[in-house]
Length: 66
Image 1: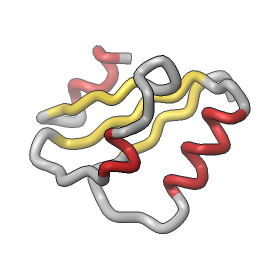
Image 2: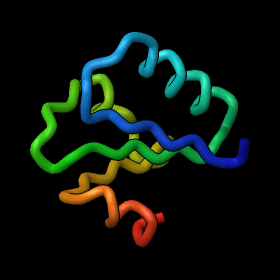
Image 3: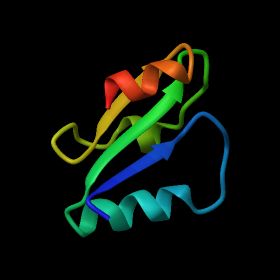
Image 4: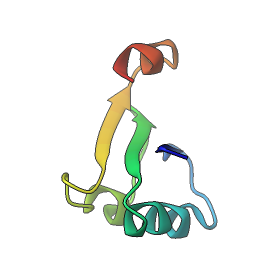
């Protein structure tokens, strides 16, 4: 793929690993989360030049952001 989009609003098993692989393989990486979601520091601590983190209020906003 040319773009990796990760939905980070919910706790998951393995998403951090997938994000790490995408970044390691120089994939464009976009991390999204609902405005009210509690997101881990692992996600929030990724340098902005490696991945873009975006919060949304409604899923319909995602297409216009992309």
